[in-house]
Structures are given as C-alpha cells and as structure tokens.
Amino acid sequence: MQLLANNFTKNPKTKPLPPGRVKIIQALISLLEHKEFNAITTAEIAKRAGVTEALIYKYFKDKRDLLHQVLREYLEQYGVQLEHDLKGIKGALNKLRKLIWSHINVYATNKVFARILLVEARTHPDYYKSETYNLVKQYSDTVLNLIEEGVLSEEIRDDLPPKVIRHGILGSIEQICFSGVIFGREISPDKLTEDLCELLFKGIERKRN
Image (cartoon, rainbow, N blue to C red; front, side, top):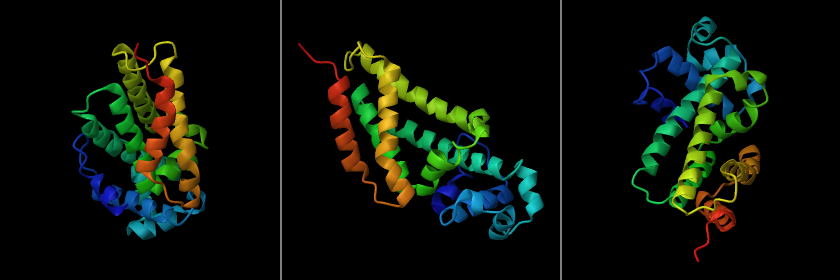
C-alpha cells in the first residue's frame, strides 16, 4: 500500500505532486487500513501526515474531496498499468480475460482502494459529479470498446447488446470480490478469473459453424 502511495508522485501522465499533498494522501490511506472513512478526522490525518490541518484545506476542499482525490490517484495508476498490460495481447477475449484478472487483482492487493471505490465513495452524491467518476466511466468505456472489438472480429456474439455484456462482466467482478473486500477474506485472482471467464465467455462467445 505504501509503495503505491509513493508511486503517486511518479505517474508519467501527471506532474509531480507537492510533498505535503503526497503526505496527506499517504496518511489517509494508512488510516483507512484500520478505520472507516467517517470515523477519521482531519486532525488525525494531519497528525499522521506531520502537517497542519490548514495544509489539508490548501489542497482539498474538505475530507471527502481528499477521499475522491485519493481514489482518483489510484484509478490513474491503474489505468496506466492496464494500458501497459493489454499491449501485445491478440484477440478481444484474451484482452477481456487480462482485464478481468487485473481488475480482480487490484481488489485483492489493494483492499483500501477497493473499499473506497465499492463502499465509501459511492454512498455520497458528490462522487457522481467528480473527476474521479469520469475516470470510472472511462474505464467502463474501455471494457465496452473491447466487447465491440470482439463483435467486429466475430469472437463475440452480435445478438447481445454490448452494454449488457459490459454490465455482466463488471457486475460479476464486484459480486465475487465484495465479501472479500468487506470482510478481509482472501481473493484469488487466478481462480476467480478462470471461473468467471468460464461462465461468461461461454455465454458471449460466438459459435463457429
């Protein structure tokens, strides 16, 4: 978790972040490993970061804006990693398999990120007006584009709406990972990806005559 937080300063697609801002982000991530977001105060964040509370409000509107910014940093890092992971993979179904594995793996290895995304952020209306939500929609569009690629290449059935297939994939990932995220149970990316692809791909794969 700390390594990923440190990587926020190294994203090649963004400018380096001010050290104080990075410390605040790292402090919230550290606190979220042991406490629910609503139980964390800005005073705790400042103390953990070794900064004043005033500095928090210099970089963030409020505590929830800080949460959204933390989630945004995670999503940007994940987007860069996914783009790299999909390079060189041939075939839409193979790309979708890799995307599914990567999605499950990030939930398995970054429970704080998963909890922010699945629980903390979505419960507040401001999330749906944030830049962070736009990144989630971009990721959703990536999934849709891969499905449409598969339809064009005749790997995926053309009699099912691509958006319905996307809902099936993303919804299934969340359902099979949710209890692991909430209750701290083990999440096995390899096993879950194999099971999920076996189930979903048999339903969407175009049959050859």
